[in-house]
Image (tube, rainbow, N blue to C red; front, side, top):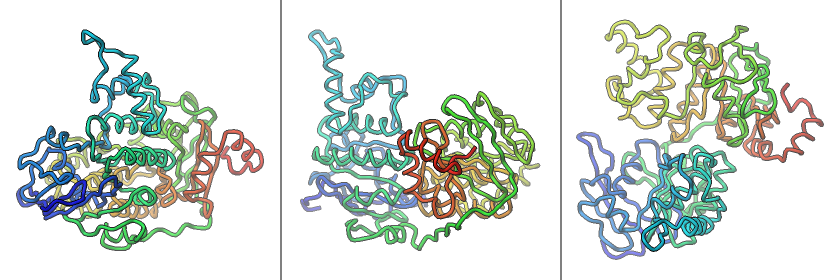
Length: 512
């Protein structure tokens, strides 16, 4: 390639695994000091491109230049680092038991005294300066395990910007962040650009790229299908490029229909919640339980999933008290859980079939041949790709298809109630729409659903009603036309005094 003004230029990149094509002549350009969104469905080729740039994969064909320098024919992670490429993934690779100082300095280096001893005060000042350059005042002495998720991402970015960083790839770093924390992180990303670093921003949350990114490139089937400045396109066009069609959104009802109560919670209270939590979920209804990280919704979700027990309160399904703190017993009573934390939900090394039936209420589905037949039915019913993947190891599937396997596992037994915890985290918009359709099909037959999520867009799209928590207490119950992302953010961020005033003025807003 001739010399170009690009910070990064990729031309005709190809990579195959046998008959499976991961990259089919992919092109990509990144400008100097540009924030560039890299978009596409799971399996579109984004991850393979990133692995090539990280020196973890060798492409079959293609050319790469970084600031006009030709990429080595056989690149290694050390080569990628020498070219100034840095990477921050959704799995941040931080050590919770170590301080911010140690997590950063392990990569950037400690300041040493004469004799080689570590000068901790000087190292702390150096790390503080690095964080302040990103607009953050995180105390270097804090344990990473005590940080919010947004603060952890900031720490990972500060660590990544060691040496002569020219390009940083942020791979799904906002996937687990609620909208306000993601917005806070956007300021850090802009500060990164101000330091002369170009940014590749990989995300499935389309709404966040507008106002943050300069341009966007969309991948599908291993190659680029579109690239455009974001001030020249809208959300709908981006979605059409990603999924190849318009995605239909459910019209919100004016208000929830009266439904017989299927699930009831009374007086749930414990660490993370400062006041009792009460709610009901009707048959065929989706109730969202949401808030910012640390609001208390996570504690409620863990109890409802059978992970730990509240100090007080009861939980009932069809009038029968269920044993909180025992996930297996909850399943026996017709109550299932789906989590978006796939690393803790799938059984790596096992096949798709084995994952589907691993937690079956009555054990395995008879003989292996019967289990295979049932698995094939579920693969068709839930649209799991590729076809006939029952005997494939689950790790060979994309994230969206792994999540469909978890849906199949949970819904195979036709449960009466379902808890979903951030069920589409890291799932592309096309697969997300398919999962939403699956869920609506199940609720239509009367299944009650609790959706615990900090993704306000997801709550608005799926929930019939939404219970908002803040500062360890329920602060609002929204439904109908009032259930919007902007209202969810408003309720979650209202000062405590304002929440109390609102509760006193309109008692119906606070469930009892």
